[in-house]
Length: 525
Image (cartoon, rainbow, N blue to C red; front, side):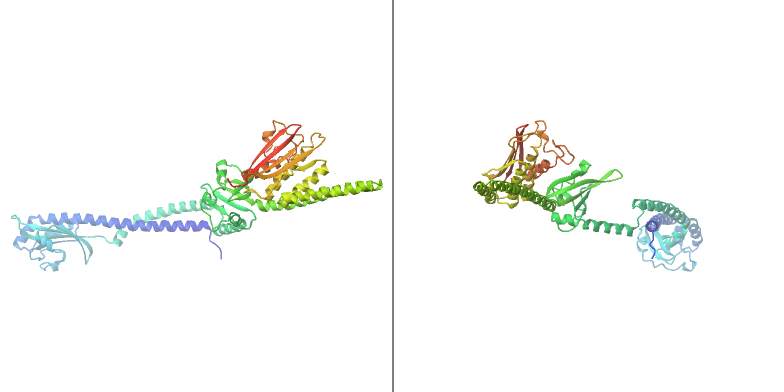
């Protein structure tokens, strides 16, 4: 079935509303007109009755019982445009009446009683000719004695009669109203159509459903707010990551997630990309940008991923690379040792060859035993072992402080974060030997848990850092080594440390080496 365009629907709806409004307004206006007419006829009937009651002819006829008064009253009725004027004597006998057959008959009206007790008043009554406004005025003689009553009646026009009398005016008013109202309705409908991008309601509904399902199907969390900081989008992934139950659309973002940092985008009016945030004790990587329509900011949207998943993927990738590097270093190391042993055997130095084998085995076993007993996390122990072997390949001595110990992680940090911190600091130490010469390159690593603190120290005797560069080494993108992909490692290290409420200090002297000290509190502050 062909759908009716929204343009015609809106126009028809406005026409209906306009017509119905005119109908209601007409009823009210006609009702007010009739009510005003009643007040007018009430006053007119009273004036007419009072005027008739003061006529000498009326008083004389009532005192003498003369029945020739009807002709005079008929003329006065026509002049005053009254429907009827009735003169009653004190016996309630009609001396006048528009219907001549009723002259001389008694009146039995239920509302006439007070008039025969010298009361003047008006009443509204329904009779044969319709609703009538009637006035009752007593007739008094010269001795101030009541001798009769004058009754004047004016018919109130009915609703149909008013419509008939005002038919032309109503037709002109309604026609002009509908004409200009229809023209305005058409313009309004076209404007609404343009604002809806010329889409029909069923098309908008389909787009809304498709948009909602698309957001819910995304692997990333998506949260959007308007300028009032109320939530407009909160997809399933976001609810899962934030542990939010139910639909929160329309609620304030500050009530749902107090530390989301999304409202600040409305103030900054520019995007923030690849920002690590802590929300509900979750570390997330967030891209937050303002939503603009025709250059005006109408809201903000955040698209983010749980860093746990990202770090697991990174750990798998870097783990594979570290494993390959470790195998390559180990293979290179054992090849060198095998060549040494083979050379000693060829020279006939069998005892030295055997001594070399025992010494190498003892050193390896001692290092592995130390790391296993003092470092209670396999990832960190494995990292330190791989860095020692990496240092041997590069000709750099990596020394582990034999007083080092590690039992548990500080609050708000895990093994992925600590591996990243230690690994980056040692890699920076390796890089420090690329620019300069050192006769005995050495890297010293200490990891201790003492007095409620976890203290990590990484020292080297490499090329050091210039004094003017030292304040900027933790800034994103800053590097003394050159290259477009540099300046990320130390920035990430500082971000992770600050998120765990830790601190990092760097001391360096150009040409003498660099020392990094990282401190974590073991209890939540």
